[in-house]
Each structure stands twice: as structure tokens, then as C-alpha cells.
Length: 490
Ligand code: NAD
Image 1 (cartoon, rainbow, N blue to C red):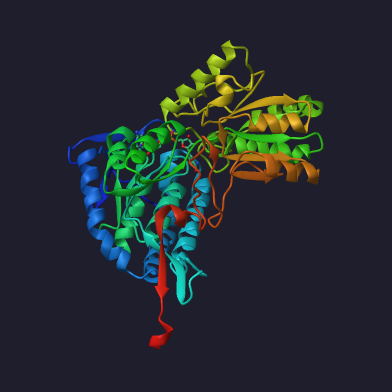
Image 2: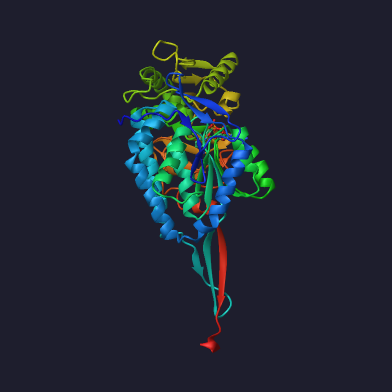
């Protein structure tokens, strides 16, 4: 690991300059692993957003005029800059989230892979050529930028979240204002620093720090922001849809999940248990794609439940590379999920293991939640339907495959889903019928690849998909071009 010193103050990147908030306000960012302040962060508000959007608006026409291949080369330089400072980025991600350095490095590599994929899109950005009913008429579609992209992200996988938004937005010829996650300010900041160092023209990528209501909401409401892409909770996604929808802006919403993992009677139980634990608890369960509903066939229920309890109790929780997962991102998150468990307990839920904060000397200063398994909960209980975003999974017992599929689909969310079975018929039927944007057989509910579209149905999103080439549809306008020629004029 490098001897990197965490910056004391995190400022905004606007028009190629590091600027404090206009109002001179700050907030403290705490280290979730020990509760101590890591740095202070510019608390930006509408005036800072105004300044950033104006910088992006001014820079956009020239950026759109740069040939897409050249834009790709410039973004490639940004990716190479990230690669060169991979250890520094991972150090920041680990410090801001409390996850291990090894996990942070893997996440950074994923962000780099995504950047490389999109830099290469500069050589494609395909439209279509097609036929016409009219003689001597040529028909094609071309991609054009929308303008200024407003990007808002969560902190759970911070460097991946930054990359997922900025690379597709920029390759399409938009300029961007990224509202960093308040719980991961330095991760976004260092990408701004690298963009500056590799010579990305000023105003192309603006990064504004601050809270959602203070800085996110004015970005969403700004009339000069043509596309809003948001990764975060369903509750905030709804607000964004209302505000940006009112002015008919393009909106992409990547929201929450309550993802089912079905374990059939014919599953390899050892393999299934491994994936349940990874899907429910890795990254402290702070994944939109984590498995929080484990649906188990009656005939194997007790056996599989006991396997899960035993293995869950063996999990190591802490910020080290040897630990299975770290803290949750902030204290409020921790107290909210403990309160939700307590309410469920009062309604009759059985806490099989965990259920509370870790208070031993090694953990008590950080925001550590015990890995938690729950049973005896109604599928329509509050805790079955609302996303907790922590290391908590609920076990449900079902009679057979039909009931498992019904329960998997009986949710307000539809992001990811997984089935463990050796029966090809069940596997394929499940992939066909499960109401989710991602269906997995014999694996986990999480995981994505840069070239694959990710997104959810129902309250998990608004139908868009990012990343993959599908994200180009979020960040570009299609224009039909018709060319009529006159054969007599040849
Ligand atoms: P959140 O919705 O509270 O915050 C996300 C971002 O939105 C933050 O940057 C926040 O400052 C901003 N924000 C808050 N209120 C806002 C407002 N009124 N206007 C504009 N911006 C506002 O979510 P969180 O708790 O930080 O993150 C966890 C959520 O993110 C979970 O629901 C999780 O499932 C979801 N998530 C989804 C995906 C996906 O790809 N579908 C990926 C990661 C996380």
C-alpha cells in the first residue's frame, strides 16, 4: 500500500479549479471503521450547483465537437491515470467505506475496466443504416449528445459508481456535473484530480460535494441539465422522477432491491450456502443487488438454515483483508436497520443470529452490524418489503418450485434474482419468469460486467440500463438523417 496521506479538506472541482463551497460551509466525513473524522468536505448548495452547471454548459459545445474517437482517447488517458494511481484510489475507497483494501482494490480494477470499455466506445457509438420506402432516399440514425448530464450516486461501491456514470456520459459528448456521495467524497474528488492531471479540458467533468437536499436537489431541478442519471434509493428516485419529469428531462434511475435467492431441494447445498453468504453479507450487504430474501424448499429448510447459521457465526467482521466484510457506511444507517429488526421482532420475527450492533472493543467505535439471519416473517411484513441495505437476510420456507417463484416475484422490487438447482428446466423457467433485470443460476445475486446492461424492474428503476452499450441510450439523442439524391444530377 502507498504512503498516501488522506486530504484534510475535500473541495469541489468546477471548471478545472478546486473551489470551496460559496457559502463557506463544511461537514465532517467520518471513517466508518472507527467513527473518527477523516476529512472535512465542502458543503455545497444551489449556488455551487449553478456555477458547476454553467461551467459544464459553456464547455459542452466544444467537447461535442471533439471527434468521438478523440474523446475516447482522452478518456483513455483518464483511465490510465486511474490505473497509475490505483493504490491511492483503493486507499481512499477503503478509508471512506471501511471495506478492506483488497475489496477496494478489486472495485478500483472494476472501475478501470469499465473506463476502458467506454473509452473504446469512441470508435463505435453506432447508429443504424436502414432502408427507405422512397426511391433514392438513404436513411440512417446518428447519436448526438444531450448536453449537460447531472449525475448523482450512492457511496456503497464509490469508485465503481463514479465510473458507471462519468464514462458513458462523457463519451457521448455530454459534459457532466457529478454530485458526489456525501459518504464517499474523496473517491469522487481524486477522479477530478486525475482528470485535471491528464489534461481533460476544464468544465468537462465538474464534481460538487454535499448533501442530497442541499446539492442533489438543485441539480435535479436545474433547467440546463438535460439528463439526470441517479443511483440511490427508491424513495429519492421517486422525488427525482417527479421534479425532472416535470420539465421532461431524460431520467435514468438505478434504485433499490430486495433480491430473492431460491434454494431448491436438488441444489448443491454447500455451493448454495457459499453464495447466500456472499450475496447477503459481502460489502456489509450494502449492494442494491444483495440477497436479502432467501427462499428455501421445505424438505431441506432445517438442514440449510442450520448450515447458514453455523457459517454466518464464523464470519469475520472488520476492515482487514482477512475479514469477510466491514462496517456499514454511517451511524444512521446502522440505527435504522437495528430499529427495523426490533420492530420485526415485536411482530414475531425470530432472529436466528446477529440482530444488533457489534459492541466489543474491536468494533464498538465503528459502525459494525452483526451478520443477521431472520425467519418467521410474513412476506408482506415491512421488513420483507423494505430494503435495509445491510448484512441482513430473511429466510422463507416454501413447499415447491411454484411457490418459490411466486414468492420471488411477490415484491415491490425487481432488480436481481438467483436460483440454485441442478434441474435445467427449473433454471430456465426461473430465468424466463422471474420479474427482475438480472437472473442468475447457481451463483450470487450480485455481480456485473462493464459490457452488460444492469438495471431493474418495478420499483428498482425506471427501465433504463447502465452500463453496457445500452447506457449510450441514456446519454445520447438519436437523430434520423434522410439523404435524398437526384439520379438525374449525377
Ligand atoms: P440515497 O438515495 O439516500 O442517496 C443517494 C444519493 O442521492 C446521494 O448522493 C444523496 O446525496 C443523493 N440525494 C439524496 N436526496 C436527494 C434529493 N432529494 N435530490 C437529489 N439527490 C439526493 O441512497 P443511499 O442510502 O446513499 O444509497 C443506498 C441506495 O442506493 C440503496 O437503495 C441501493 O439499493 C441503491 N443503489 C442502487 C444501485 C443500482 O444500480 N440499482 C447501485 C447502488 C446503490
